[in-house]
Length: 184
Image (cartoon, rainbow, N blue to C red):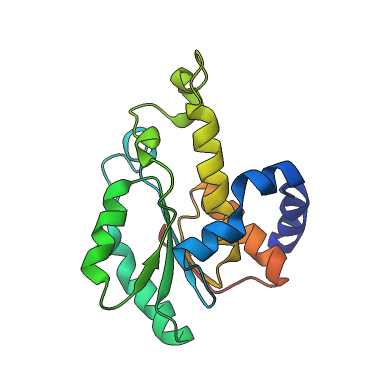
């Protein structure tokens, strides 16, 4: 079933030329040092920490480090791409800088994700002349596509973005990549 879903999702998420130019992933990867082999980690906080079953139970980077270590030792890499909607996660990478080389997109503000409402119901994203909704969409798409390019993954399979990343990675590799789900 995952292989079928991966093929369908891969077809549906094809990036057109205008979006490819907007995202400019090759330049972004070069600027941040995104190189293979690399472990991709998705740490979703934002609205999920306030509005879902995970309310009050979101974990910091330390919770993910044992899984990152396992993949790093098994596959002989210390490079880790962090996809997150929480600036504090990025700040906490400094605590592990001797052990891992963390890379992440620093060109967008994660403050847009901070809300007490589920993102699906946030009217403030599309009112007036603001571009908040567009900015969230672009930053999420960048994180999704970069996660899908990673060789190994640490994900939350309760998250739509994590599942999409796994499906796209499986389609790209034509096999399910090594991954760990932090949902249990």
